[in-house]
Image (cartoon, rainbow, N blue to C red; front, side, top):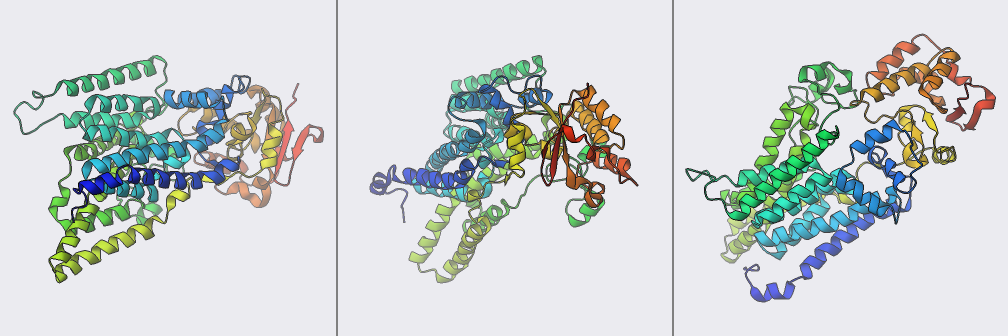
Length: 551
């Protein structure tokens, strides 16, 4: 059944399957984002890290002399920052962040369709795009943050890469630097690996003019980016603020199982994961994640049906896989410089499996039909059973997870955040980090410290220690000294932290939990529960806000 080589069929379906793919993408992404767009307080958790400071595009008076804002701005890539600046003329940062996934979904679907069409035809393009949308491969798209651009840019690069349009591929590779620098490393590594021809004595001798121009473009863009970053002392898109050795990280509580950046499991967790003898968290381990397991299962079934010919993929597909694995190993050994190793292999493995399935599903279908025509009943049964089992596993495992965006939650204490937004714009508010996370995002007011960057920045670490010492102090004078020294205007108290000795439970990451446990040991009296009644400006069942007028 030569459905791919039938010219009449191709002419008849030309463009219609692409439109179907894009329509499917639009419906799924819009249905996923619509409830989020309609509710301002339904947000992705990392928006409280990356998005809130962009309110300054609409109101420059916000977040003046705010250390957290300056720290957060360093983590915003040039492309993402400018995209939000342009959008600020039309909408607010929260809404625009929720709209980004719809645009990215359409772009990704378009290029996945073209990739499938290049490999085997338009039907393969449709299959690849639908698989991507139905599976958790798209789980990063739904958050609308910088990392949402990683897979779309990788896919666009990969399309021009397999088409051997080297200058365009190099241009897209350079573009990734503006949105998500780790993706640039994957693209550039794939590009340069593809230039090596091990069959020849001099593997670089027969490079084309476009290959050389593309390579020079990648090298030039990389040099320009890193020189600009280090000149500004702003390389935080790729690095930790402080360089740690592996031995140091194993001893620091911030990187323990209970730390803000959990990299190592404790002894109890090691027993749960017998295949992880080194006690590494999944941030450091090479995949596989739950959403990848069905793809692996399907790939194995297709390999069973087609045999080793299923592995005959285009050279560039394996170059992409090799680049991801090599960068994973490098990032593992240079963690402080390149940050999480999982960033370099997660999407690469997912895309490789996606290509493998999309290409070979059509081949498996053709082989089964061919056996049916030749009346090879036994062979047909042996091949059909695993073929249909893998399809059923795929459908039941993915469960249309794209419709449920990852990491979104509805914020509590809405009236509290609305009230904080009425305070003076230059206010500095201190409170429990878990409550203060959303304060800049929904109240547009500066927070003294939050849970963000506690594992990276020494100043945030210092502030958090000082706050907890004042928060759980027994003498009100300590609270006054803290507020005056740190120029805090308002303090937020979460009442249930002090009920039934809840402060003895693990409400915070290490090492702050250990600090609180030591301060509150054998104590029941806390000065912060007794502010001057005249200073209280907001009170609810769970929260109290009082002003710090210590002059």
